[in-house]
Image 1: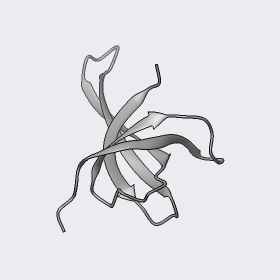
Image 2 (image 1 turned 45 degrees about the vertical axis):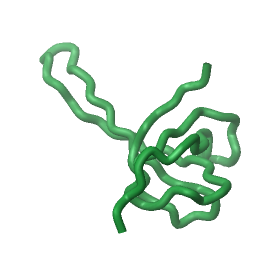
Image 3 (image 1 turned 135 degrees about the vertical axis):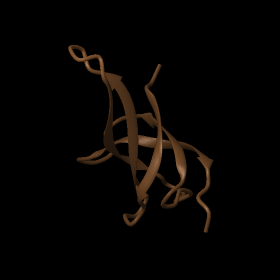
Length: 81
C-alpha cells in the first residue's frame, strides 16, 4: 500500500511538475499543544491538470528525478479563477 497525501498546489511553473504543500496538525509530546506543520512535495503531473490553488491527492512512487518521488492521483477541487 502506497502512502497518499492531500494538499494545496503552490506552484505549477515547471513542465509536468507541481509543488504541493501538505499541512499536518500534531500534538507536542511534552506541552500537549497542537502544532501545525507543513511540508512541500514535488509531484509528477504528466497531463498538467493541476493549477495553483487546487486541492489535490498525491501518491508515493518511484524516484522520477532528484526531487520528485510523488505523482498526482486526482484533482479534488479546482481553484476559482
